[in-house]
Length: 424
Picture 1 (tube, rainbow, N blue to C red):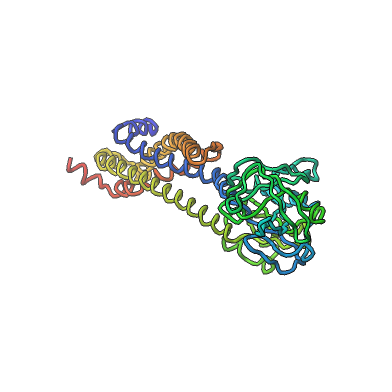
Picture 2: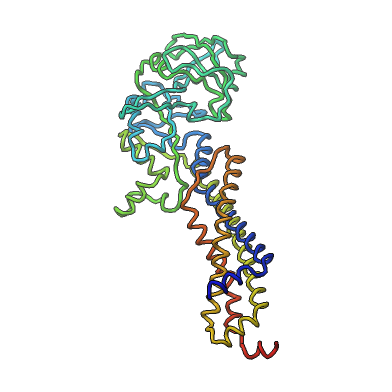
């Protein structure tokens, strides 16, 4: 009997129920889309932000005070400490090794061009396959570290050949172009020529530098297997107050939580552990910018979801309130025949639950489609379908529907059968 009454009640006033169903489906659809985007696109957005360059800088721990101008260490190669190139595969052995997206070593040498102008030579990896300790290979270098750089020409090979990529600003100053041979003189008087393979625009200090293969500069400078600085690009979580705490002040449980979270500070700490005698410093300006952008995106998605759900609650509230007011005589008759408030209320709760399940299912399907459209148009990537969201959205839809039914239930409880039937 109860199910028959419920079926008849649910099928009444179909247009009004359809309006509430659409509002509920839209609210759940928007929430599903934003959650799918927030969960799946968070990493994609972080990877997009990683295209702006390194967020961790590694230097020797026993290094002398660096003398940097324009991002170039101008100390003589006889001064300061160096890092060992053979240690770099260890970077892919840390706990968060899969979050290491790219890295590139740097070695610096000053030189002079024929007109007397000073030139900064920077030895690095361009596109270097690195053999790892587990037998696999990892492609890294400045191409992977800075994918947004604009190159005219080609990258040199990572070999001990006198080739170079020249910064666009420096090339314009000296009139160099792709295919030219430039002659430079080292501080000890040795001269050499470099074949210009390309010109690069970065918007940074690299536009005033000459980038050469690290192996060649190591050979020329007499520093085989050595480099001065390492830049690392790591995929990390946004920093919060816990991430900014000093690990030395943490309890063992807190330290384990911090160590096992991909914060830029914990990844830098693990790099120091595996390389030894180094100082890994997060680039806080970059990390803070990433944190701010990701936090604002998450807040925006949260606000949109809350607004959509509030709209769904109001739609259900309006529908159920109107339904209860129109069915007051029926409610009064049920009470007069002995139905308790709980029995009558259960009828409307069951009706709202059915509305929530149907709206939640339709909203979930529509939300997945919306998430794919958002992801494709904004990020050019597909969102991974997460079935675990379906039960969560069904529960949320039922909660929204029941929330919109709370006020009408008070009308049901306050309905006096004698007064209502007397009015009729």
